[in-house]
Image (cartoon, rainbow, N blue to C red; front, side):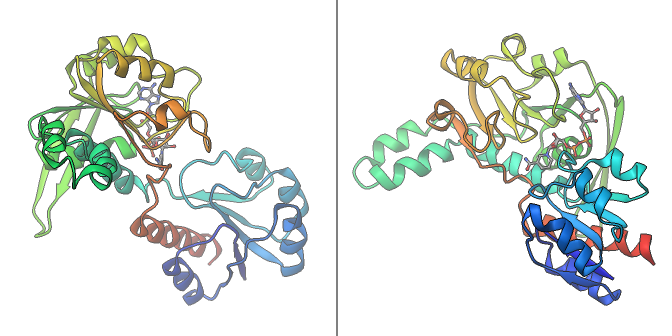
Length: 316
Ligand SMILES: NC(=O)c1ccc[n+]([C@@H]2O[C@H](COP(=O)([O-])OP(=O)(O)OC[C@H]3O[C@@H](n4cnc5c(N)ncnc54)[C@H](O)[C@@H]3O)[C@@H](O)[C@H]2O)c1
């Protein structure tokens, strides 16, 4: 049986599938040629990430297809309900990248409390001529330990972020309209574990109590953080968005930074991807990454392996 991994899959995923007798095609077929390719090659499983669109044309015209698999979380590029109506299995790997995103949040947090994003720009330019001035400019760092991390959206990634925060010695407060309480288990290298139960509190209380806010909500119609919410936060708070572009009002963010309400922000996702606002890109108080939350080797391996095991389970 043939699996077409049109947007790629990890080597570990390929090995697992091949061991189970599948043939994995690692080509990227252009969108308009997909229907023909799938039919000519009798492809049974179509794996995609975010690039390939799986719409009604493919679902209706490819009778050999049994499974559509999305490596990752969001299924915006797949007509999921329609595919299921037509009897196809639609699978994804919602948990595989949670820890990678959580670590990226902390990469930003650790960086921003010590101004690393700015220092990394200025040291190459002036490190040899203005060392003492730069030393003074970056002298007022703070520690994360002992600070309060407010998490908005306490699902998979929110809880993974809480785990890292607890490990760092932070207090965690969280808001989620659909989750009252979460059990968090910290596992250590030697097999020891420490358990925490975190009861969620109101959004307003999270905003008021947190030194740093991290967003882990799905895309939604309204901003989760805009001027009203910035005004509720502590003066000088920090904020990280590694969830979805559009959950923070970027104009309100720039204003809050300019007014000193927010001391630092970090963005991995943007309202206008792939062309974020230049005002954000040029702001020295914003630590920036180009939507790489899930982009670690470990997450890619887990995604490939999880897809492989689900495919084997369904088709065996
Ligand atoms: N940066 C990246 O590369 C990257 C990678 C993977 C996922 N993500 C994004 O991270 C986000 C979280 O993913 P997840 O896997 O944890 O999802 P999840 O579904 O497990 O958790 C999301 C939680 O948010 C809660 N929620 C919904 N609306 C809310 C609101 N207004 N306020 C507070 N909580 C709210 C939900 O009840 C849910 O518990 C998603 O937007 C996802 O697209 C980003």
